[in-house]
Image 1 (tube, rainbow, N blue to C red):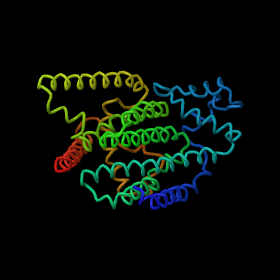
Image 2: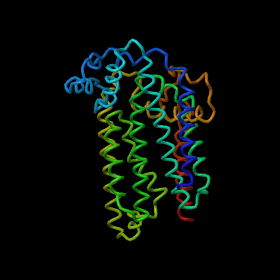
Image 3: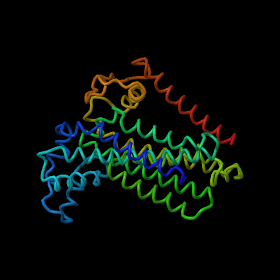
Image 4: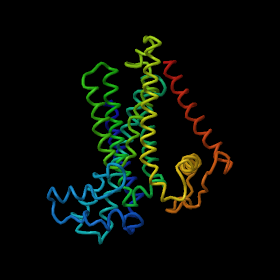
Length: 343
């Protein structure tokens, strides 16, 4: 790894410069939409002093989500305090840009670690890993689909959630690689990544609930032959059935709780939960299309013209979009697992 140190420093500098140059022209833009309801019109965020009581009230001043997103709200409050008010949106957008740049560096670090493991499994040439990771991070940093995440102030909630999720995945990979190498401290790093970063991410925005799922996906694709998965083959059939049943039961209980929690909000929407889930399949393909074939005209703030999927066949693209997602997920999983078996 030492021979790449100079290259890594160069790549980090270029990534920071690229993210700054791309989004800096937009930092003078105004506050918009939910910035007003969640930030500007929230009196608790308007800190005058940094005493504990004021910070606490600012942290729990948003009634959105089960955890109220206190870390994001404190960041807005501190922005207000040090900027001297809401008269200039630039400090708020600069903070978003800084978080975005940090996330890009974390993504670069995570990709380096993933590619180290891929090289161990002989999936990729280790000499190419730095540049592959750099290209992935650069494309992620400067892609126009990131526009609203960076320049829409209230989207800092998603940015902070992504920051702690990426940091959690980095710690997980560092710990997992230490365990594979037989070095101490691996389990501790994984625990800090899962519990510590996962909690901080959830307190920023609930997107971070996906962190353990990301970790599990990495386990099943890159560490399928390592402990504890290597123990599975030696377990009695009855034990396997019991463990599988417990996993399914836990997933069912968690899904039921999420549905029960979310259902009341649909009383005030023009669509129900099933219609939303069916529509999301088409929306996902829409965004994938924008990622691979960016169209500047499609990166506006309004996307209210997407038709609802009321059934699997209305519109007709609903079913193919869902089948396509499941098919692609299964194909990628099979490909990665075949690489592991070959290695």
